[in-house]
Structure formats: structure tokens, C-alpha cells
Length: 605
View 1: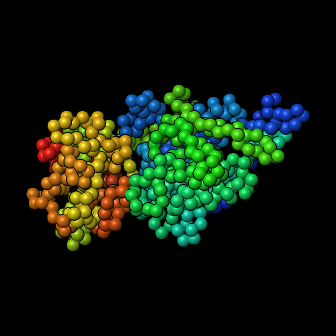
View 2 (view 1 turned 120 degrees about the horizontal axis):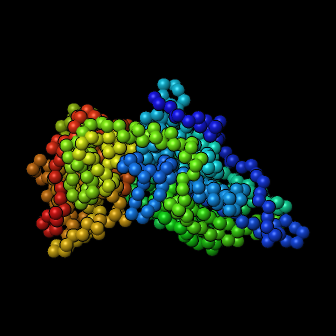
View 3 (view 1 turned 60 degrees about the horizontal axis):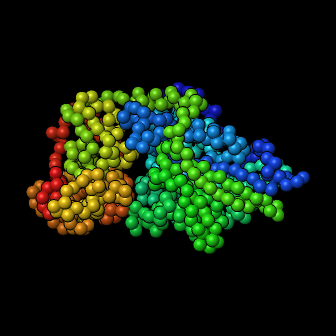
């Protein structure tokens, strides 16, 4: 296997941080206080410092899109990558003094790009054949940037606990997860919090406690990797346990980094007793918190204030945009009273990384790794007889989605028992990217990877005909109701701001209509299998990804359904293997046209 071309071992942590220990950082010489900070003949009475925050970096190092083999671009003019964030961080440290700036992340670091996949599967950081693997590029970058802490994201578990533990060992900062517990002992499996000391000349140090919380949904979404090994409790529950403990240790400031959104919602229905996006609940229900860095939902919330119901104190929350598009800056003002520092002001704002250039140091460290991955994703795997675009996949049955269905059904069919092989086999899958396109002519790894951007594995689950109809009715919530006679505008057709594209499953192997003129729950019409109406008691094997199979997005019945097949192979790799083995990707082999949108029975398109 190839090895990293740069000698980056200087950034590798020499030993793992003890599981539940509390790290107290060493002190550094502080920037001299200004005259305004001092009383006559005394040390400073006021002080300021900042905590910088990133989240959902998803292994975006440079401003590059591996799926298009070009610089990242979107309609808003955003730039991505920690290389640009590094420039913003250096600017903040230069302006305020490095000793007055902490740097924290809110999780989802090691999954999300071809770079992440390469160092998890192609040349894995866990090594192969007994050899030690390379250093993860995100560890290299974040060590060089001197991160102080990071919360665990749910996608940290996608490649298994062994990969996560190796990444943890390679980091110079702790990965925090107070609600990620050892399933056997129910003790923290990762460090819950860390305490940083900021030295103030002539005055007591300021102790900043940083508590990390992750998403309970990991128990569902990565069930195959964590079941029996780790358990995940609620954010509020664990914050109530650790925030008082941190205050008892003398923390002057308590800061949380949460891989959890701030609207109190959950995508998994009642499958878990804990809220998915609970940062607002933590702020409201747990006394003693000053500010929270929020992650997980890939949105930008520059500053949001929640009043704690017990103390009446305002808690400031901020969620920077994903992929390194934004950097949150929390500014704290403190006052020394009776020998104790008290927070007098907390403000937050986000900075746009498109305003700066990529940092030269990060570029030097990781440019060779980046080029290695660029070469990998541009490897040809076959040819295609026609252009296969996903641009209309959210409202039309397009051949490129049938390609996914074909691969899923083919893989499941090879692993079914004799009894289950006699059952009708169908597939469900979601359109992950409206910009995906497999071109006519040569097909590369990146062409296929751009269509299936997640590292999902494959299941075969059993649903009855009645359950399948419920499943498809749930998917049909994706569309706004458009009465018959009203023109359909695809720009406003979908509920994509609340029911995201990745949540919307289409099916193959059965025929059906979605009548968008009807109310939710009554939209699936003419559901049939091989020309005959589907009966309520008919049993199907459904090819489905692990995220959905384990309850992701709250679909009914599927999480509790019987298992007919399971595999640890990524669906994306199965798709690449399919093209490689066939040599030629021909939509005539799989295009089906088995579903359509209607209005009172009249086709929309």
C-alpha cells in the first residue's frame, strides 16, 4: 500500500490520553495587560480572551471538490477547508495574543471526502499487514493549528472504533465525549472534559473548562460498529453531571462543544429516548454554562441566546457553517472580584473563510497527500454509454438512481438464504447529490463517488406490503401538496429545508405513483409488484443502507424489521466494483421508470 510521502510523525501524539482523565493544560506566558486592565498599583481587574470554533469539517483540508476534480464552488461563493481556517486562526492569535485564544471543534472530522475514505480504507491509518498506518491528514492539520479540544461527531464512528482510536492517538488534543460510554461499565469511553489555564500577570489564572458532548443517534446510525461496545446517553443528562463538577474544580468559564443542533428536533422519531439536536435544551436546563459551540446540522447560526430557566442567565450559542466555510469567534470579558474571575460579557460572531488565502504551513504539510488522493479518484474504472445525471432525481425516476438500486439488489441477492431468495426483492435509496453526474465515456472513481457520497453499508430487511406502503408514504412527505390544476414548480416542490434530500427514499422493484395533490399519508397509489397489486401480508426483502436500516430519518418499521442480509462493504465501493466488473455502464441494463409524480392521477412530467 502507498505511504504518506511527507514525514509528519512530529505531529503524532506519543501516547493516548487516558479514557476519562481530566487534562489540565500547561500555562503560557501571557500578553502584557494593558493599562486599562489594571487598578492603581494592582494586577489586572478585567481580562478578555476568545474561543475559536469549527465544526463538521468532514476532512475538507483544501478548497477542493474531489468529486468534480476542481476548486469547490457554490452559489453563495463559499470556500472550504481547514487550510483557510488556519489563516483566520493565525489572524485572531496575532490580533489578540496567542495566550488569549483557544481553538475548539464540535465534531465530524474524519469522514466526508475522498481524502477521508482514502485514509480509512485505501491506505488506512490503522495500517495493514502489521505495519503502522499513515498519520491522518486531519490530525496533521489540527495538530499544526494547535487545537485545544474537539468533540466527537457521529461520523467519527463510521469507519469503526479501531480507526477512531487510532485517530485519537494521532491527535495532540483530546477528543471529548461525556455521553459516549463504555457499554459494559457505563463509564466514559472518552475524556469527558478538559481544563485550560490562561495566565494573567499579577492575578489568578483563568480556568476554562471545556465539556464535549456527542450525538445519541450514533447508537442507531452506527449500530453495527458500536452495539455492545458503546452506549450513548442524552446531552442534558450528562451536562447536568459534569458542569457542576467542572465548577467545583474551580472553572471560571464553562464552555461546551456539542455535536448536536440547537432546535430540539430529532430525525429518528421515538427510536431513542434522547433528543438529537439538544444544544438549546442543554443551555436552558443546565445551570452554570457560559457558551456552547454547536455542530451537526450544517447550518450557520452566528449568535443565538438561550436563557437558563433556573438561573435566568443568558447562554450564547453559535454554529459555524460546515466544511471549514466559517469560523466562530466567542469573545469573553471577565472581571476579578474577591479573588474570583466572573464572566461579564459573552459575544459570538462567525468569520467567512472565503476572505482569506490558504495557510502556507498547512499547504506544505498536506499538499502531497492531497495530490495522492486526486490521482486515486481520477483512476478510470470503466465507460458509460450515456450521460447519467442526478439533477432531476428528486422528482423524476432517473436512470442514475436505478444504477444504485441495481447494485444494491444484485449484492443482496447473492447473500440471501434459500428461503429468503424466494421472496420478492426491492431496493430503496435516496438522491444524495443533485449535482452528481456520471458522464458518457470514461468513468472514474470520483464520478461514482460523487453519486454516493456517504460511507453506508448494505442491509436486506423484511417488510410486509402494508409496511412498505407506510414506508413510501413517509417518503412522500418530502413533497409539498400541489392541488390538481396548479402548475408544479420544481424550485418549491420539495420540503428540502426540513425533509432533506438524503432523507427521501425512492424504491425500485415495485411500481407506484405519488399523488402530490393528496394530503400526507394518502399519496401512494397503484402500488404493484410485477403487474399485481401489493397485498398487505406480502413479504419483501428490501435492500437498504445501514443508516436507514437502523432507524435513520425516522422511517417506520425498518429499524425493527427482520434482517435477511448484511454486509460491511460500502455501497459506494460496490458501485465502483459493478462498473469495473461490467466494463461498460449501460442504462439499458437497469433503467426502470417504475414510479412517477401525479396530480389526481395525471402525471406531472
